[in-house]
Image (cartoon, rainbow, N blue to C red):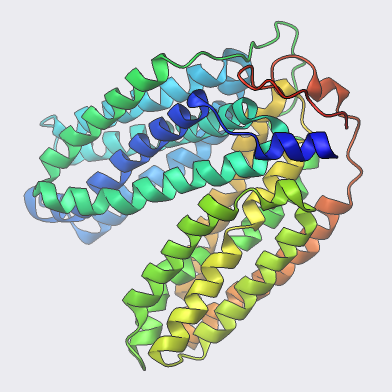
Length: 404
């Protein structure tokens, strides 16, 4: 146990931080084009509101469909290949935005960006876990999530400062190329096995963890779509509450993301669900400004733990050659549930009011709690096969790997 704790607190080396930096740059490019996309389609290209919606939705549909392909690419060709494929696709997306193809160029760019996000995240998540060591998977995923959230949060601000959609698209190209140049200097230990057994697209063992992750994220479209509108009816604390929510997610994942590595992930998972449920219940009442901000902070704090708790548990049970697929399948459940709950929240809000959408999110947390029971109750197989090869040890760490 002492050896395990020593490894958990051992410093992460330069390769790990290069991967986090490249991920940050990639998602910074995603965020940079967002503020100007709708005005560019609507005013510069003469598109309708429906065109704007379809252009935005193209990204999500392509990203969801690309997840499983990205997972197989990462497992069979390497994490670095998948990561670079994602950055290359992001570069081409920026170029497509700049070409004189009109609305067609926007659709092409959004499709390439969806493919890029799927490959980038899958490669980055599997690679960072292996560089950090699978025994620190929660910590690695926490830092990775911080890089993603940081890029998405800072990108729109930069996009507004650049002043035009074309400049933002060109900046996305520069960011993707910079990230690819940084990534090219990072060596990869993982070597795909020539005899990797061919499996189905989705392993049955991933369905329950995927459901747990999916139900946890049902709240996300409720917060992004209806929090400000709901609170505007009373305290008008929506903008401050949303900023607090996002800030707590970012900071908690950075500073507390490694907790599931040091205490049982079941504890962090259910603690996160309780905090989220309390935060949603507080926000549902439409409270005063201060209480709304506190509720949003509690929600953001709780949201920081379920993903890392589930994903780290599953990854520690997964063989080297299947981690890419594991990450991609879990991410696909996230996309599917966020997309479906976006439509559901809209229908519920239209029929029963904004407060009812918060009830939907709380009910989804109850379903996540049930799914989580099976995730953490599952008997972990012997990890000897996982500990062999290139996955567990970070070659730059001198601390010996603990026996499991």
